[in-house]
Amino acid sequence: MPDNELKSAGVGGQVITLLKLVLVAGCIAIVVNRLNFYELLRVWQGLVPGFLLLAAFFIMTEPLVVAFKWHLLIRGSGVPASFGEVLRAILTGNFLSILFPTSLSADALRLALLGRRHRDLAHLTGTLVADRLAAVAGLVVLSLAGLPFALRSLGWSRALMGVVLLCVFTSAAIAVILAPWTQRLLVWLDGWAQQHPSAGRTIKFMRRATGIVRRVYNPLMQLIRQPRLLLIVFSMGIGVQLWRIMQIRMLFLSLGATHAFIYDVAFVPMIILLTLLPISFFGLGIKEGAFIFFFTSIGLAVEKCVGVSLLTYPLIILALLPGGVLFLLGDRTQLMKSVEQSETQDVLQRE
Image 1 (cartoon, one colour):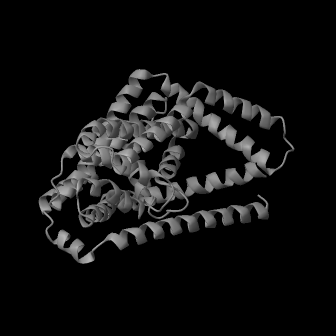
Image 2 (spheres, one colour):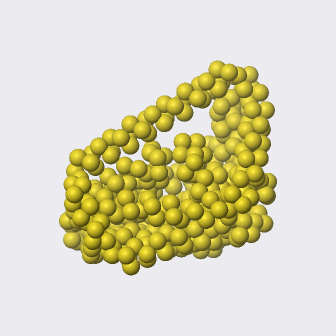
Image 3 (tube, one colour):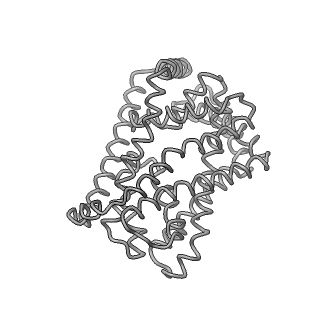
């Protein structure tokens, strides 16, 4: 790889990191401006331990449900991975994502761990994309299911309009990904790029990118042609999102908030969707702002909204500890070899 390409990639990464930092700082500044810290401490002092333990239970057991869902897709694609391997990859990947906030995501780390064992990265990536699409579709369905009940109480508030806009945008994105003409467009782009082998860096990048996307897209389409499997995975995806909604519900109850559960169903999926966007670090700032935006519309105090959001962080760290143990017990060497091999192949392909 030429030095100028390395420098360009490094500068690009630094710019993205800087933009994320600016966005996070801006969101935190807005939250702090609306927050009364003494009232926040008072809210936390009234915390009910029983509901906090229930929230910890839902967070700690979530990887089991996620692993079972992804395992169904992996077996449906023909990759002979066991449930234990999938669960281990999820736990270890979640833990290591804390160490790589600006480079490798939890999904990339999961693929690195499983791909090292089964050497079928294209099919594994296709299953992961299908899993993510099912999860996002579940978020949209739950939000739309809760929308009529919230609308009856709130009318067309800013929060509900935000829910509708996010649902429309997300549904459109899923439709574009799965549309038949998307696959034909990829084939055309790949063929056009192959006809220009000596073109500039942009064409070379396009040729390489379309090749990678097509290798992932084909296994994804194979899974799409299995409606029974997709129905099961989609149903489980809704179950996973309900599991996450219960985490937040228990935290609200631990702080004395007793609003109708239907608002959690309508709002929490949208908050999850916003935190999944790669525009901040672990949703920091974005999540707190989203809690304030949605839940103050039903009369909750800013301090309770922020209090719930901040409580999720120590509980998530607690849920990451099993992955840290697994990493120290054996996944560390395997992952490093996988990452080194991937980087070596990437350099050879570019040269």
